[in-house]
Length: 198
Image (cartoon, rainbow, N blue to C red):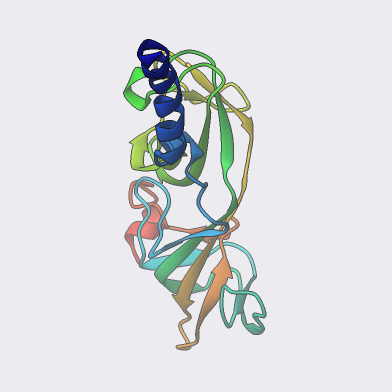
């Protein structure tokens, strides 16, 4: 009788204890969206300073919802980039196809990618943890570009992200503009002669 009781105890106790253990990393909720990065300049060589407007650009009162038009800046104008805000409304989803031991990932796992940091680095979320400025050169992009080593993971869906910059016009007006390739001279590594003269 004693033996049966001990056997039952050995079977039941682990089950009870398992129910009381904290959740594993894989069950930790994903970051609440949108994820906002302040003072963001999301590519290698990105720099705030003097920029040239390459097409007519609208400046808004804020980057947030409810913004209003504040000014229009003509093509060729020089503005000063002051800071930036990167918003991830939906991260990129990256499927793992081969084990990635350094991230404790196995085939079938998914990596969420948020803000790019340039040169293949980005902020990612996996196994319930942030990996900030992580080297993502192992990821193949949706168009089959990008991967530089092993290639154990591939982008299966591209997210939705915006980058807004706060800038000052030559007339002293300060406002926000969503970046859509309308500014030249943002890249300090660009080697553009017209930018060197600013």
